[in-house]
Amino acid sequence: MKPVYFAFFTIAVVLFTACGEYEYEKPLTSSCKAKIDTNFIGFWRFVGYKTYNNFQLQIDSHLLAITPLNKHEYVIIVQSTKEQSLPLIFKAHLTRIKNLLFANTQLLDGNFPNNYGYYTVKIENDTLFYWGFIKNKLPHVFNAKKFFSQYANDTTFISAVRMYKRMKIRFF
View 1: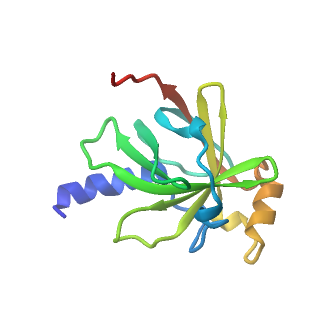
View 2: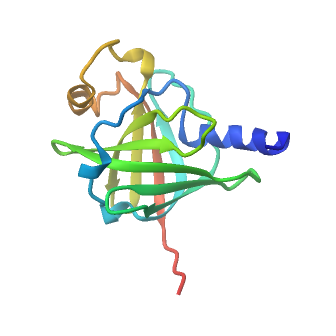
């Protein structure tokens, strides 16, 4: 990879995955049990974020394209609108715990560990919200499904809530 593309790629990684957010080698649940929620499919424009606990989030203007990969998983393409860079591509599936939805996201690049980031996700009107959890605020050993379902909205553990507006794009 050329040095200039590597620099842009590194900047782009920060757009979607923030250092210091919890990730693990396994998803919360297997993707074979997940179902596609068509409400997430489409194009989304980043409109802002709110951080908690002095979490440092360096994020640039970008777009998300979310489309089904198969019956259980999505492909998420993240493209910066300011930097001339290659897009980031993630694989994701949803886990429902009680009345909460969590996205299990995995960057599709052989140069990075295949860990999963866990993000609480929701859509209100035409706005997509997602947020992760600060790694060093979590217990060292815990049951992830039980913990995240109990503390999904507790700002003691939340890193930053990202917000996106649905884009109305018609191809035909």
